[in-house]
Amino acid sequence: MRLARPSPSPSPRILTLLACCALSPVLSAQTQDDGGLWAMWVGQGRLGDKDSLLGDWRWWLDAQLRWREDGQAYDTGLVRPGLGYAITDRITAHLGYARIESDPAGRSAFHEDRVWQQLTWNLPVEGFTLQSRTRLEQRFLEDQSDAGWRLRQFFKSTVPVVEDRTTFVSIWDEMFWDLEDTSWGQRTGFRQNRAFLGLGQILDEKKTISIELGYLNQWIDRPGEDRLNHILLVCMFMTF
Image (cartoon, rainbow, N blue to C red; front, side):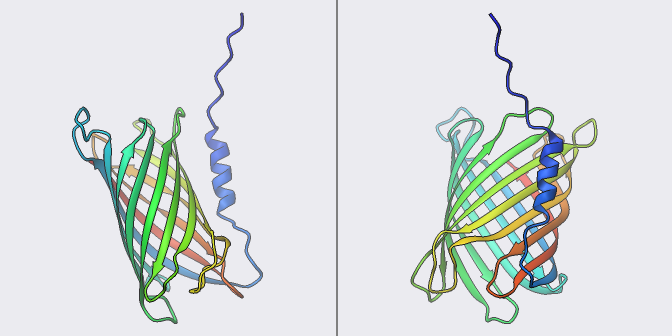
């Protein structure tokens, strides 16, 4: 009797090719370009000891600052806390809230509140990491009565480039779909893509702190003129 061979793991070269393709989204004829700087901190951890009643519960917190006009003008500040539950060792569900303060070019400053739900999945592969995150958001703008529902799909891979696996290439892509029209301008359909390529470094022996630096390509679909942002992105990740 022949035993079935296990399915081969996805090739890092295939993942790299897909991510590089995502760096060139389909754009309309008219596009406005800008440079920017984004800084991000992401922390997460257990609410209790591994074998305690809270061992499967997780907390999440990320904070971001964004600048536009080649990094010279403040654009956005974001804080996003959440509570999660580890369904398995590889799958975690989260529920949370986000507060966004925006000061866009040519418009008055405003704030947005969001409720969000997400499912993260660390896929079993050898030699590199592969992660999927599916997030659903309900967006509430100040002085507006209707909520805008949005779906975000994120894929990320990290590939070590040194033997001790502390330095790595980071590749990710995130796609945004607006799920309904709103009175404040949200339009149903595929509205944004973010693609990142950079280098990462693990900073401690326990591998709980890392930093990533690289290029983020952000394409936004807008009526009349799309926007293409070329962003220097700095991210710090901490696990507790």
